[in-house]
Length: 584
Image (tube, rainbow, N blue to C red):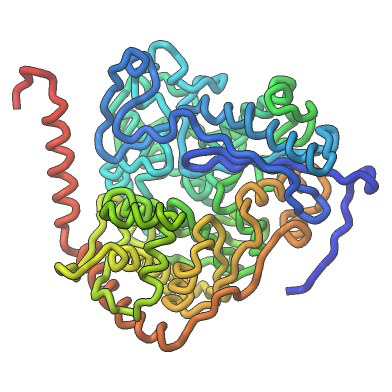
């Protein structure tokens, strides 16, 4: 890749301009202040969401305030939009104060702000953008709240969309690897219609949270091209037709025209200017550029310097999202989507992903590790993750005798089925916690290999594997990924990948770089080939991967036991929460 130096186009090059990037994650929002000329992070702050993720009960609303939170069915994941505004009120001023104290940065030096968000995360709003949960009439209605990306209760609705699309030969379904996810806009919208028609009728805009936050900052609702294309089935300027939606449900016919369709902004463009109200929240100057919203994964690619074809970026945290640019358009089975300009203008942006990665490791540590390991970790001043990593690092490949399926939160790619579940095969009375922990690490690497092979077999070459996100700090995990994929692992050279990526887009929206590629060349951070594959371990992993692939295809493409167990669980939950005296 050619190294190119770009001149800033600011009015005063003697001023060290800065921009703000805000990354809205699953549990918190992070704000960073970034110097425009070189991408240096000058200040950072994190603010956790007060309500976190509501998965088992509705901990917001009048019923919760009265001490009787409403129970939620299985596979739900809700949030409170007011928690996002609290990030703007708290984290942005705190990051600005840190930059002021450490570097003398003044609020007047800030020329733009950009945000990224988990996706697909949906907010039902009024015409003015008020979330429906903030209306008294709907404050205790679960469907009035934000449906987080990992809300998977719309799987039956996604299944119907997929079946109908294939039956009718809809051309857009191939752009999504043949399957629409339960996480996306249309499946969640159909669930809303059929489970709470009153809230659906009151919903004027079905808004990606990425766009809702930008709306709060600049006062204008602009859909971003990234989520519209990947999550909103916008391909070649068109959404699914009213005829298709009518066939799903006659009352769904106007879903696009009434609730989804809206002007779309391209990545790196300005959606508007910071309002006086948002300036008061953040402490930033009124009138600075507010960039079009973006997705946390896709915005990370420029931060990792991955703006050329073939550079696959895996953003590894609670889940993993894989994004990559290419100069060819291909149909990749099970991909989450391919969008023209979906990551950077001028290239096809591909997305795939795994719904559970860090979440799986966290679940096992919390629920599957005996107290003795927790005690040992405390005595040594380690986290349980660090202890289990250390204890399993010395094993030979295959020594634990296990192989696992990484579907504890379903499968996003390549099966696109969130009714699938986790599995560990090979356990004996000799199996110990470090064995299972390592098997789970390996399972996520095998899942990534499935995704890489799907791209390569479809004619979309993968030339480099770059990791971003918190999990890159685990050297054993990174080495496993290198060995399993037989690819050198490069790592993003910052702890603030998505927020830095947003800052890059803010710099473009403010006019200091001509485009995202140029800004990434100056502001992006990456360390090349940090972890190299070992041929002996890679050969051993080939044998384990063959077992993984056999289980993957057996349970993911044929045997329906996991689906039947999910159905049993749902029915048991319904019985447990039936009103007293209800007939069965």
